[in-house]
Length: 337
Image 1: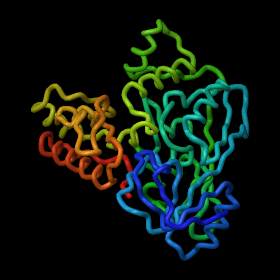
Image 2: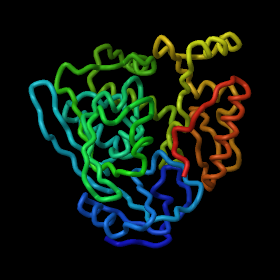
Image 3: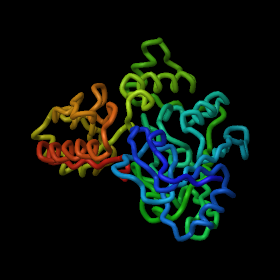
Image 4: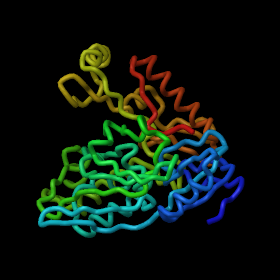
């Protein structure tokens, strides 16, 4: 294991922002991770996974520890289910493809989400009607303070919409090293409830889709809307869809009857942030090398040499405009560093 000084993080964040780590080290096992933590107890640390959910606005004045622990294995199964453990450093989409290749159901709707497995419980990532909490069993994590290994079961994690205990109560206290998912082996619960998926499947006259066909539909949809970070720097959806109290939403809806929305409970309504951004006139706009993608208003992009601060300024302009126009505050889903 080698520690590098003043190390460029450009290829370690999907926005492609040029920023440097004061020090950088990659770890490839839990033992290496524990050793690095033990040997650098007093040093400020920054934990780096796939770099897909962050916006770097400055250099990182810390020891950056890149979690590059790999491996996938089946740890238990019965007639109907399989329990699959993936190490934190596995690429999420490649792991989803692994489960589909083995006819394990439950993750197909989350195909092509950028990032690594280890960060999926942190955000409770989700797409097209499914979330990590639907299949999550547990994760193993290492304490930054004393290197003890702790298992967090689903009930421990306080999962919410893009929320978990790892973003709140135990933030910056643990490093997730592996995750276990419970997936179906048969009688898969195929979810095509989101219109885009059923529309995509209908193009090929598919009425009873396989896991692979659902995954392919999701991949096609995402590719049509979302730029490939390797070609155009981005972090996927930059903002969360705001959830409003029904009474508050109804007042706003009277002023904007064309507003899109989804009823998520008797008391709450979700409004698509992308629709709000598009209606505010930002879709496809460019401000130097920072901008909003032409096909998906939720996605902020780096056209080449934008700084993190420039992208952050665009995001704040969007937030202020939407609050002024609609009276709705939208939160960033991306972690601003």
